[in-house]
Image (tube, rainbow, N blue to C red; front, side, top):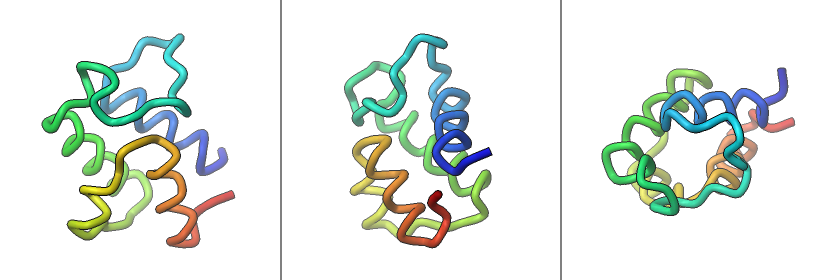
Length: 79
């Protein structure tokens, strides 16, 4: 499974998203479930899935699915 597909799965599970949600287009606070508490759960889920650790600036900057994916790519985990 590709990094992008794995990340979509993490987003879907951590934010309890409907199957028809366009995950790749998601942005922070665009949906009710991605609030500050949801954000921390999402970050923890990404760290667990990919065995990485984000620093504080990365956690703050993670404002969209694309940003999270780009961060993983910068860590050498992208497709």
